[in-house]
Image (cartoon, rainbow, N blue to C red; front, side, top):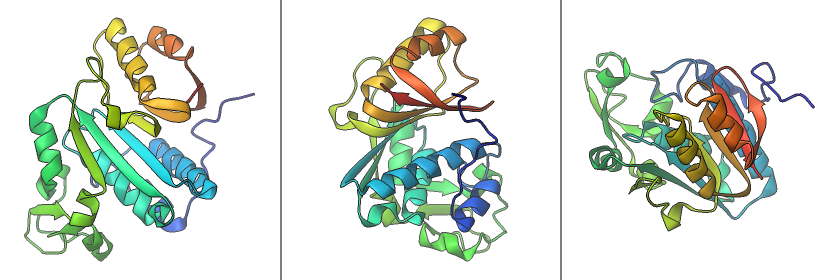
Length: 234
């Protein structure tokens, strides 16, 4: 059976579709070209929503200063995923200064390619303080979004935090490992965060074929495009 690819995009709510295509979930309105990642994430969130799970744990590995983890929390709320399910997003990074910045949740428009003099759409005021104010460069995520995400300082190559284990969704899209051995170790550590049937999202361009072949022993590909691969853990 053929693995679904970039042309096999799921049907998602129109407002979500438009925001994905405009790049609004990609690191706070900056990075384009991540449509496949977000479309696939919405698809699997919808599947989880249909199962009415009591709890959902999402891990963002290599979370940096928190943009992706917060964007995932925003998306879950926009889909209404948290109405029946207790959703917890956890960001993990091995750089303490980035974790500290992520926990504060304060960012600048100018860091994300947005003119400080331009007011962003009013719908984002439900997630940010300061976005609607013309000339206000600094903005902060509202408490509701900040509390939906936990951040952990940890190196998963050394120790996998207990509170991050048994996750349903692992996002390792921003992970970069230098050599094959480290790549294999990183992917193996990501699998340790999962349980059987969990989904693992990675960047197709960041890992060698040898590392991906090794991963195939523990997980099967369910989606692949030029930029993204989604695995289901065996």
